[in-house]
Length: 69
Image (cartoon, rainbow, N blue to C red; front, side, top):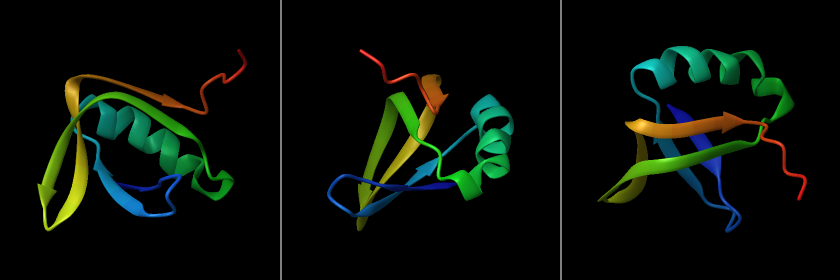
């Protein structure tokens, strides 16, 4: 699982599944001390007591994406 700090300064949990957990998850663990920026497209939203997000097979997860316009 990945804790994400939103612009609203609230934290939401993002669960990474399957290939996202093994590939991106390891990259995030390796770079956790650098506070990486994570961009995710196509998530499942859960709302039981607190909001949670989960990756799907079609999710696209980018770590430290190029943000130049």
